[in-house]
Image (cartoon, rainbow, N blue to C red; front, top):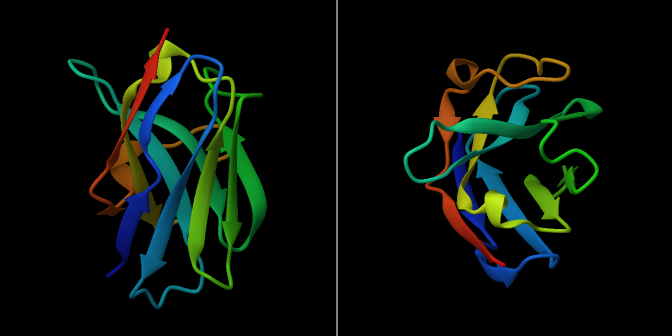
Length: 126
């Protein structure tokens, strides 16, 4: 079992920044793939970024590449999503997720992620 708790969502103007946090606990896996997904109203949940706890291997969706940065503090079992240059299209509920399988390079497959946080809302106004 893996428990994930997100924090850091909120409302910002376009062009501003937010940092999301995901605290992980309760797991005994030697490594995890931790991903961030988002879901806007009326749309499917989409992968945003992922990182392997075994090493700094990161991947990003094209829509956020160059603006978002995923990182982690393994000592704190906490993962972060730094979101810069926010756009109104970034408005969504953001979810942290974990998979005991390895991370794919360049993509994140929703069904691979067995553990999910409760989500945190991000709203970007123009």
